[in-house]
Length: 90
Image 1: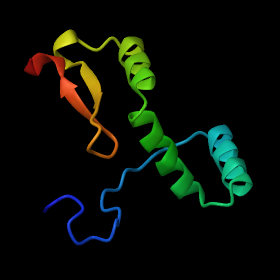
Image 2: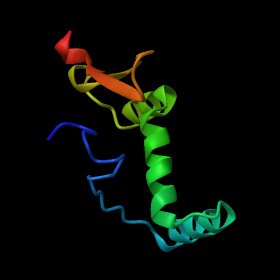
Image 3: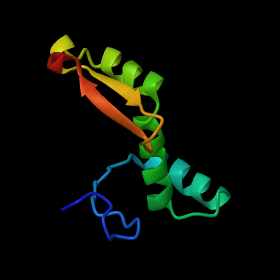
Image 4: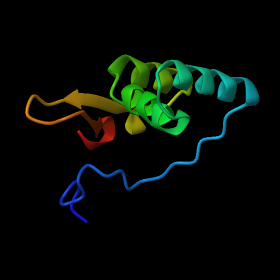
C-alpha cells in the first residue's frame, strides 16, 4: 500500500497502549481540558514524542540501545515529520 495515497489522511495503524490507573486518569483529565478524546490525545502525544529528537535520544540513552541499532531523527525541509536513519546503515 502506498503511504497516504487515497486515504484522506486516515490513520490505518493501531497500537494498543496499556496505562496504569493513575496515568489513565491523567490522560482522561487532559483530554477533557483539551476537548478531545483520550485515544486521539494519546496518539498526538506519541507522534510528538517520536518527532522530538531530544526525546528519542533520551529514550535510547535510558534503555542502553546498542550503537548499531541507534536511530538518528532526520528532519527534511520538503517532508512532513521526521524520518529515522539507523547508525548501523552508515
